[in-house]
Image (cartoon, rainbow, N blue to C red; front, side):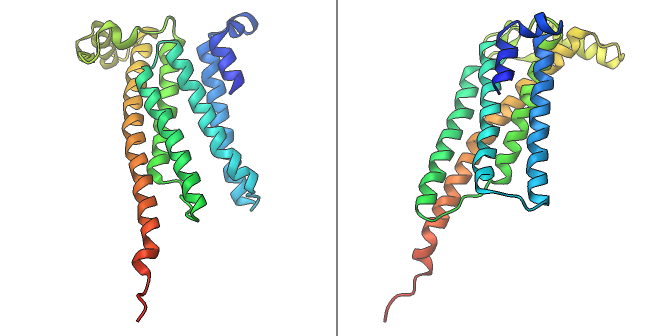
Length: 218
């Protein structure tokens, strides 16, 4: 995570390696994500799951994604309101799990939460791709929110036209990366709210179970 932030916010990549900081950040993020998946797979396969691992693994995921999203806001590639919702959801769910644990309720990771994580990763990589081929695109292609209609933007029309002829340019890749990234970010926001509701609903159901199963005394 620190390496990702340093690469994106300083000219170290250009000076030391002679490549775009965004391109190097993509490599770092993908390697970090892959090793995180591999770590969990090996731990379960070898039966080496530990309490420390259960504690550190989700924290590592959240720190990596949070750092990347915050840097994307700094770079003008992601709207701050979307990142606030995503990160706010993480704090709320973490607090809910602490309260649940104090009451003896274990809240396991839900499938919708994992889907949200994948959407976030797609958004981060796609937005970094959008910036890797030159200057990052202007937010919403210069149009004001919520009047943003990407199909009316000349750069988007050109990119889709070049796609039909299989003559994509570097700018076309930037346009498609930006569209995919912003779309995945919208999906992440929706899933963040949805999954937060799902966690609270699960907690309330589990909390009410003892009262429902209690046998009244004669």
